[in-house]
Length: 303
Image (cartoon, rainbow, N blue to C red; front, side, top):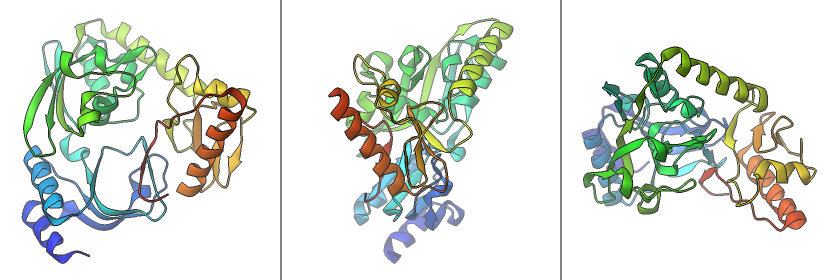
């Protein structure tokens, strides 16, 4: 342990917000991952800024996560500080047809609040298992809807600790990317613009999308959702299926038999199992179709 760094952290965060050697399998939807040297849960933008500044001053690598729904952490863990923006920063407020939510709010929670207030336009995100912060960074989407369709502005923090608002037209949102990702900004909150709707119709749409998810996706196993990005002109799951890889397994990791676009932790997989499975799938698809599959899942640590 870096005692000086730890002592500085204690000046910024309550001790219960600082965990040492925290197993990352507790904080990722894959349910794998070794320990992070430091696991920090700041509760305000100011605390985030101070923690990041402390990391930079002390030369400690850091990584920002939400609820770990799109993350694969190495079995040896992470030699640095994981800063989680999640439950301690998850407030949601409704103002007319607009919603303002902190970065740690779950998309499912925002969707539930929208339903409760008769607001339509966010139904597509109801089943995405991530936080608003991550969704803004990667322009998360599903079933024909994307974050770029509903965002009005995003409050971010720069690497230098400057806090400012980016209006929707300057977010440069594309397929799984944004200016936030390109610049390495940290999302603090976002304003979402929706429309007045009928609660029954909103609920019916959410129920329909939920049914489609449950019937087509392997939700009963730990995974990180769609494992690969959609190659232009193709569907990753179809390419994997047509390469004869349905059910293909490395150790405890498997290409889902239910949906080939998902790599699942079927039986006590390690991060190495998952990474090797992804490598082999990508290699076999490229060999058969000449298409390179780019991972949608982020990696943390040494692989």
